[in-house]
Length: 87
Image (cartoon, rainbow, N blue to C red; front, side):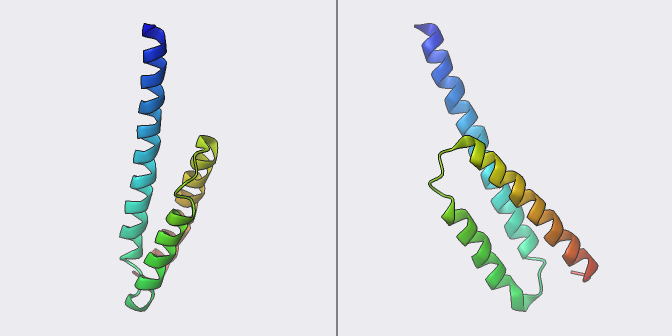
């Protein structure tokens, strides 16, 4: 009985940590979008929000981890591009 509760708790903890990673990615994306040229900020923020909304109901943990990894790669490229442009 104790084992069953423990397994349930650890799954909840993993879900919580995965959710925290998603939120961290979202906040990081919005911060980087804030460095974009003024004319592009609103569109960039809307795109970020739409990407998050498109995957809001995803329950496949492996897919979520993939999406986080893909999002971090895309943010890294955007960050580098903004650096090259002096933003």
